[in-house]
Structure formats: C-alpha cells, structure tokens
Length: 535
Ligand code: FAD
Ligand code: SIN
Image (cartoon, rainbow, N blue to C red; front, top):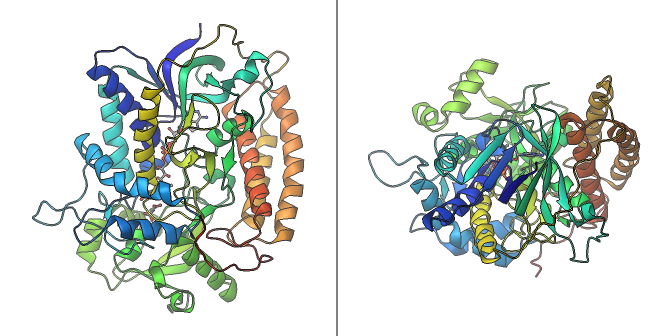
C-alpha cells in the first residue's frame, strides 16, 4: 500500500521543518485533520542546519535599517540578486525570527540585559547577526524539531531516502522542461531499513534537501549534502539556476584528510580575528579595503592567491589579541574543537585555516512563494534558487532565507488547497532485472575521481581549459556510473553518487556558459567586468 499524504516534505532542516510546522499549526488551529509526512535520509537532526555557527541575520537594532541590509545583500551578490526578493526577505526577517523565538529558540543576550547580542560578519555594514554561542544552527534545529514533534499532523520518517520525484512522466506522458505542463505527485522513497522502494503520494511536495558539498574534496557540509533534491528536480524537468555560484568559506580549519572540514565561523573575524599568512604577516590590505571582513568570495580568492604565492598549505586567523574570556563565551565550540583536535591554545596559537566548499547559491529555480516550474512542487532552503543570493550569499542570510520562504511556501500551499488530484494509475517502483552489486569499489573510485575533478578544475579559480577538462572527464564517470545504476537495486550510495554526478554536470555547464566574472564565479579567461547593477 502506498503512503498517502496531503503534504510531503523531503528534508528535516530549517527549511523543511519551518514549512511543516506552519502547515500543521494552520490546520490544527482549525481542527482539521491532515497528514504531513517529513522524510529524512538519516536521523532527523543530521542536517546542514545543525552545523550552522555564526547565526541568522536580521535588522534588529535601531541604528540599523532594512535599506542597509538590502544594500549589503545586493553588494555581496555582486548585484545579480533579485532586488524584489531581497526586499521581501530582509523586511520579513524580524517577524520570522520572532516566531523561532516563540518556538523556544534561544539567542544570546547582552550581559545583564534583555537586548540580543548582535554579531557582525563579512559584508555586513552593521551588527545584525542573532546567534546562540557558536552553535546557532543546532539550537534552531532543536527548537524546530521539538515543535514538529508536538504537532500531531506531522509524521517524521527517519532513514527514508527519496530516490525520484513522481511526476506525469510516470503516467507515461511526455513532459518538457519549459512547457509548464508537469505535475508532482510525491516521491519514490527507499526505506533504508527494509531495502524496499515505497510510494509516498502527496498532493503537494516540498523539496528541502539542502546543499551539495560532497561533490568537493573539502567541504564544511556533513555527508548528507549530496544535492539529491536539485538532481531529482532536474531529472523531473525542473529548471535549475545559478549553479556556477559555489560559495567557498574562506576559513575552514586546516586538518588534512578530514571530511567534513570543521568551520571557523566568520563571526570570529567579526569579533576581531585577523587573517595572517604563514610568515605571520597580514595580507588582506593587498586585496580589499574591508580587510578580513570583506565578502566571502573576495576573502576566499585572496587566501587562495596568497597560498599559491607562498606555496603554503594554509593561512592563519590570529585571535591572540582578543579578550580570551569573552572569546570563549562567544565561541565555546570552536575553542574546544581547536584545543581537543589540534592542541591549540588560542591565547597564544594562531588557527590554521583553508577555504572549503560551503554553500550552493544556485538550485531549483522558484518564484517568490517557493513554487518550482512543476505544479505542486515547491523548493525551499539551500536546494532552491530564489534570487536572494545572486552571485554570492551574504553571511547568515541562508537560515533566514529558509524561514522566510518556508513561510511563503506555506501561504501559497494553503491558497492552492484542493486543486491537486492524484491519479490512481501511478505505477510501483520497477526494479525488475536489477541485482545487488557484488562490490562497491567502483562507487568509491568514481566518488574519489568526481571530488578531484571538481576541486581541481571547478574550484575558486577556473579557466576555460580546466572546465573543458572537467566536463570531458565527468562524461566518462557518468557513463560508468549509469551502467552500474541500471543494473543495480537502488542503494543510498549509488543514488547519491548519481545525483552528485548530475550536480557536477550542472555546475560545470553553468560555469562554461558564464562569460563574465561575477561574485563567486572567477574564470581566468573571462574579462573582469565592472560591478554594475543589473535589473
Ligand atoms: P539542511 O539543513 O541541510 O537539511 C537537509 C535535509 O534534507 C536533511 O534532513 C536531509 O536528511 C534531507 N535530505 C537530503 N536528501 C534527501 C533524500 N534524498 N531523501 C530524504 N531526505 C533527504 N547559514 C547561515 O545563515 N548562518 C550560519 O551561521 C551558517 N553556518 C553554517 C555553518 C556550516 C558548517 C554549514 C555547513 C552551513 C552553514 N550555513 C549557515 C548554511 C546553512 O546552515 C544551510 O544553508 C541551511 O541550514 C540549509 O538548510 P536546509 O533546510 O535547506 O537544508
Ligand atoms: C559562519 O559562521 O561563518 C557561517 C555563516 C554562514 O555561512 O552564513
């Protein structure tokens, strides 16, 4: 028997849970019974959200203004952000954050007062980052999960892996990417405990599957970040946008061989931390007047260039001049990690850091209510491209985007209620003729090669030759993997790798098409364009 839901939410990070809780509260307030299924590929809190450190941005103090936050977002995005979307997100931010607080999220307050302690990060012209120590994401995830568990219409399915979206294609109809004639009816989902693929049918489906980090060798993202939602949507003829804009966080801890890379929050530089090269000299003055607090794309490129110039494997952040007690109070997690893993005493030792893949600015193209080009399919959070980030995301605008769009998608879902009908004729998953592969060494091998291709040729600094080489090599990996996929019963590893190959294809294709250097996309063969505002 298929599972039947009113609403299916794929992902239990801030995006999925914001949407699910809003819907559940809406119907429970009206005493209306609905079924909201939330699926998550491992345990519910293992999400990018849980690892967010710095915080969530919003205009909160009287000195600050919406106009300043809007401008900072536009500047960071190299003026490729959609100003209309930026205005929506910035203006709706305080209300959405008040709701998170109402759900029980704690944010740090200033000593002895009721005012929130606002931090500053790269690209922000004012103090506007609400945070809980340096584990803001874990606190938000905790509060949202508690809220979701308290709502009876939400059922959370852990260790369920979405393999494919169910669309008109599965009814034998032909759909085209730009024809606007496709509809989503839920997803085929692998129950990882039984190994069976089950039908999860739903009148409305939300993709909230997060990032793509594991396509790269170095990433701050946990292992769940394999771009599944974007790849599934693309295969279902969804439209993807801005895939060339991969954000590399400038300061991941340098720990060779470690994946994911532990993050040294940008808030550490906002607190006074200074970037230095391995000779102990500052270098940001050679790159940008905003020094260590320039937007991320600029700092990451500066570090990359510094490392290439000196031949050194990393640079440092120096916090030795900061008030240690206050530092530990704000950054207990970072202090403890540096001490326990590298034996560092931050009163006298510098922190070794390198850039690492951190965030996907592009994703499934959505409108101002999170609707994709496939009817009754929404996308919210890191897997979606709303137009907020343009060519580069401003720090702490991601958690914010997810709560704002979770809310907006919920509004549109309720408005469109009753318009979606699920046909009886949706077939079961067909795996006739497939077997369990005898060995998975090929999967490991392809994964390793994929990461190398993306890191060496599609990283911070690109060139036409590197991109072409990446595409040529990717094609071989694609062919090898497709053969394995066709012959094998589905497994999480095989499906994730298939999705990551598809993500790599979309990133390389988008990078090849962009002829100007904007924000995070830097191609040595492109003429540097002036940063001008575009409509
Ligand atoms: P996630 O939180 O990643 O949730 C994805 C969910 O989808 C998971 O439940 C996963 O299991 C599920 N899923 C994925 N694929 C499938 C599938 N096939 N089947 C079933 N389930 C699936 N942003 C900020 O704004 N401020 C910060 O301070 C900040 N710090 C960060 C620090 C780190 C180390 C990292 C990695 C990111 C940080 N970010 C920060 C970015 C931000 O955390 C993420 O962009 C955001 O949390 C994404 O939320 P999401 O709900 O879209 O996805
Ligand atoms: C950080 O704490 O540096 C991460 C902030 C972000 O990714 O927005």
